Length: 489
Image (cartoon, rainbow, N blue to C red):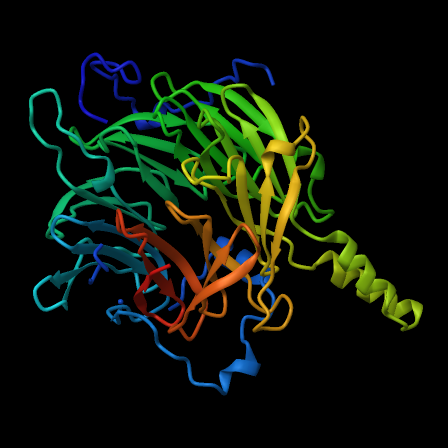
């Protein structure tokens, strides 16, 4: 977002708040040329994910050597890699990668291509801030920067978020420290404003707050208060006029960036309640925005095995997508011929069956023949493609494809991230067994796999080479490696 005094989304001279004065605000609704051509984090969120996942050690494949199809590998980290971000600059044929992990370190990597020889060169720069906990999230503002009203081009920035509460800004070109921002505890996610990249959001998994900063002035603009649990994901809408967030309290909340007011609260999972031991009920895990012809749809994935599609401006639940296959679990239970006591134990196991949705996304509207499609991916390892054009108000939508890998036992490899291809009807998924799979959303078949990791992929970032369809896939894994793959359809 350019620093424009006439910008309607932010005040010309924002009143920066006292951090001790943050209070809950009321809900006012009452309701490339082939482009090129580094101790594990132990926290509540990580333990919760581990408990939801099926057997992560695919023993049937452990005896087989993993074929490394990556184009580049960085082994800078000494512990699991939890976060990666990437950006490809077509003009310089350079890929910028940021990585962070359980070793409390963050790194900036660059891969450049010599167009004359087609040879790759790579560099790694350790980022200087001394963190005291695991790096949780990373974001570049490079895709969004513009020239401000003075004619000055804004700086390329990398934001690093950490569970120690630090949000650190670096120069994305050379890794030099720009600023350490005061923020919430246990930063879970961060993202830049899509109009100019000068405004930064960061959400807390601990205190449920969302902080918004103006990067050039290094000041806090707003603190959004309202979630009754950790904030698991958040984003600006594509036009930058609203903020959406989801949390462990089962709500999707819509905020006005300019005023800090809550515009609406979707209480999507309120009826689920909590456990008898006082534990919280299932929450929302992931979020994607920008769906629909007007770009105002958001999809939220839940620990209850459902995804919820809402219209942010219309304040309406559009569809509920039943990703988890309850019928299949019941069928498995009915096939058990053990005695009643064993049946009770089986019922307990069924209740604990992993069902969380870990990744969601909308198909880009520009892809022909796929209007109103979206995807959900779960710890069950299943990718589902839905057609929202058939959804009735609040009801389900047409399930177009159910994509299940045939190379691994059922539910042995869960989905951790998914990304739609920018110009083709393809979905790229990362899995807990270290594989990246590419699916044709039209017919539900796997059209490519990328291998090289020997353990769970925790995060994935995908860039696309404009005009070629080549996808540049960057992954971070429990095997301590950061890898870069190319997928050429």
